[in-house]
Image (spheres, rainbow, N blue to C red):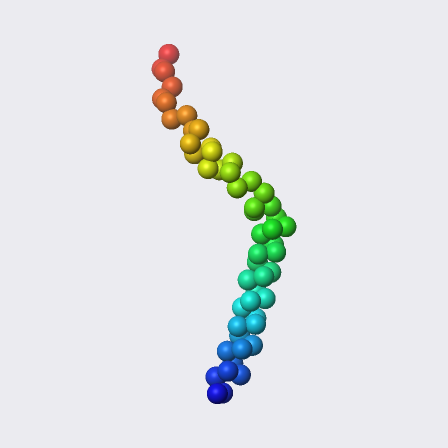
Length: 52
């Protein structure tokens, strides 16, 4: 029972920390373009350039 006095505040702090990190990621634009990086991988041109 005494362990609950440690685990409950620790879990609340952990939830608040995850919320702050998620909020920072939203505000910094991490989730603005979800399709762009996937399309850049598919449309990447890997053909070698011809030497002159």
